[in-house]
Length: 163
Image: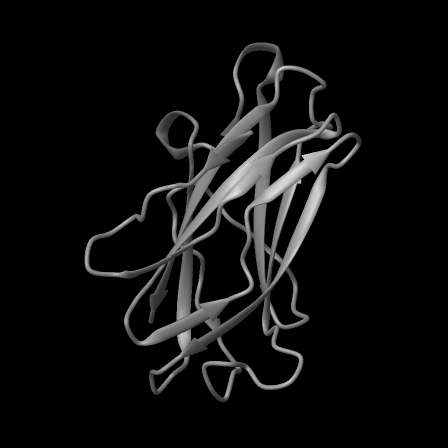
């Protein structure tokens, strides 16, 4: 069994992390996810991802609340590849992946490693997002199905910053 946990991006920010375990014959790729959010925000719903045989995408339904007058924010993601690239594994098990973010049911914005997204707005009335919970979505798409062996692993750090 392996555990994956990425480190927080910036000091002084609250950190929410999840751990993934890769077990059994069908778990072949994992992405550990850590999230840093500023003190005037609350977030829930992001989890580590394990991709099994034939899996190439995954979606997290996220609750994101901003305690600011504009409720605006940006998203910055950095992967564990060279210069923050969205890559996992090595050699024959190396896979690239894409991350996109959308607010509510809006169009998804492709995130570029290390670059902040354009202005986004949280429509949440409170930290718990009310019944139903999700007001944003994070999608991860792999370039190809997970390899059989060795397992490909990686991590991504996400910074949510008020605007």
